[in-house]
Length: 159
Image (cartoon, rainbow, N blue to C red; front, side, top):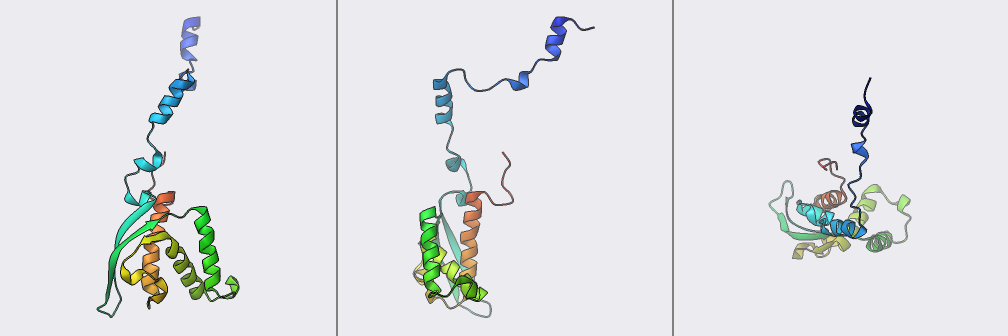
């Protein structure tokens, strides 16, 4: 038979104790002292703006496409503008009526027209490019930035 003190010790619920300070002002100070989650990320792709060096050589060619780009994560308003541009590029043809490649090209061009805020001269107007594969490779870098920024990457830490 356990004594009252032993029972109390046995059923102590320390795990239910709150780590929240008693005073609201102390809680506010703790919160304000916590670094912003976005600023504490070390991966450059975790920032809203990400600068990267792009290098691509077309198969069976000596031409190299190279330069520095800065990609910016789009806000909701800008994503809507991307949708409007994508629709305009389709020239009024319903999206479901476009072939897959044309729909993909329109999506990539529309998205990067808004998200790439710094480009080399050769990429100032992506519609002037002659290689769809080049466009896709560039878009993959933009998508990798977005995936990391939004936390969709596989190596994301569990918190």
